[in-house]
Length: 388
Image 1: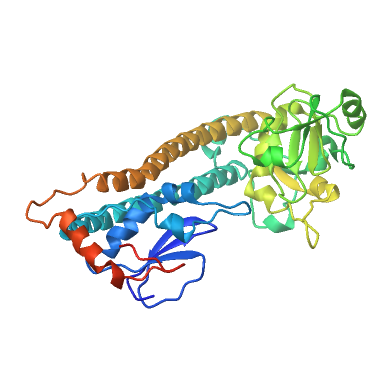
Image 2: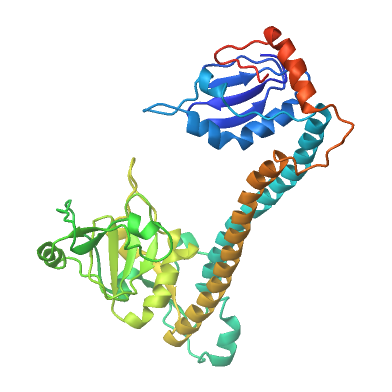
């Protein structure tokens, strides 16, 4: 195929479009449009992007959809006057480059928000977030001396704080049932890793169910209650969720349950477990699927402030996270709007509304007549289609 050929993917998936910048050879996964000089390749490129839904609707197949040569010949390709084609393509080049730039900038925001949340947690569990609060409220009493974990040997916590292991703070650290349960259509929800990783909080919308009798048997080992803390320990490691519901449920072995001695510490401890200071200690083991052993989880150390400062830390973290959530909602709104821009601009272009029309242009009907006269000289082959 010569340079300037417009390539259109016709299978797995349908609708990717490119213009060959140099001579190329294609396989059966493409329909290649070798265009006459009267058809601007960029105009064809953008129009094929615009009619992608039509191409998908014309495709057939069971294992995967494919657009056949005969179906590709039926694509509704509109022809504009030659110079108007160039004006449309130039305008789309300009505006869609701007849209792409906006999308690129917006795509950078989500990682920034993720880093913001991690920075907030790091500040919360190092004492930096409430440094001003301690100046006004903290008692001039030092806590019991304690040492940080080796991974955080350089970390210095306030003198009123202490390092304590998960085990020291907990009445019980265990995991869920070690055998595959018998599922039923309705019953008691049964949680796995997926119910903790599908967004914030605990997702009960996709749970499977076990019987009341099986739930009662599983609760002899693991009885989840409000203000207990769940931690994913198999596959996806270290996702932390505080239980904020009284709904009964059971858990699989892939989830660890931390049942604190003092439930008042649950909001802070759940934030601390999710912080970089704790996550660095949650090292998986195994060659394939990674696991966190309960023995290791029990040994993990977290910086523990007094209860009143814990409450202040949680309040500030929740306020900052709420701010980040509002930014994220605005980001999603902006991304949804920009995702609609390209289809809208293409639709406007091929309704003839994007650029002004010039009465001095040769009518499209005359261009079509000349193209039809030249049609015998155009090649039309499987995988190598002519647009005219």
